[in-house]
Image (cartoon, rainbow, N blue to C red; front, side, top):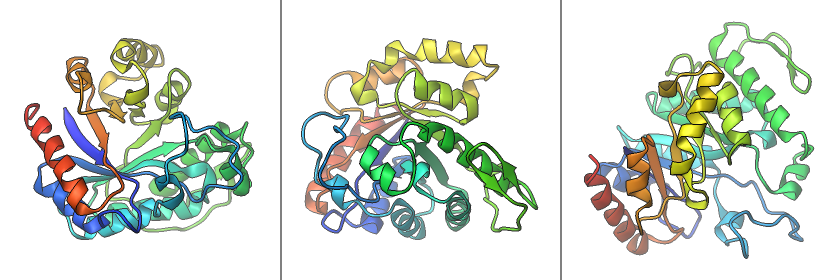
Length: 280
């Protein structure tokens, strides 16, 4: 089982470059960057984690910028968006950002995607909240065409792109893994339909109990288990959640780091590396 870490990287946390080097030095597999463009005021949408929205949600840096910085100072670790809110971004530009980062990193990018929960934030980008998942699917389908075709075009209900020329293409073929984030069963179905893996929030659900059901759904849809690895986000170092994840064949666990300076972040990273060593 692989071990990754995620952080809301801010102007007061450890820098992306120092964190990326530390992750690589400790033998961990991946570094993930979440996304929120802004948090509208007043707040309306409840935070799925419960309680007050943590400060780092307001302050987080752009994931493609911080991951590009991380790519420049590392050679081995995977670099993922955890997750990119494609419903808030132009698909032509995102396709170029993904391909560019995959080129810069030498084929190390993991494209975690999601539809988002903050209705006010989504509305400010001109996206209708209720139809966001159809938009997400069509934008991802359009990006796949951009990554794989010489003169791509796409025609859907919500996304229509005329024939174009656009480079670079990604290093990874046919494109970096599109790993769909969200809950069960709806996001799981989306992952099966057009993804290369599923990112459930393992810290908020009994994921081990759902693994067999997920892969049964995949089999019924004609997808093979090996084509849909599971990346469990929000797993805690405490308790037995990591052992349970390994026991049911989850491919990767991603543990959240606090958005704090190096003196507080690196000791936590050391703990994660120690646990990861037991599963090497």
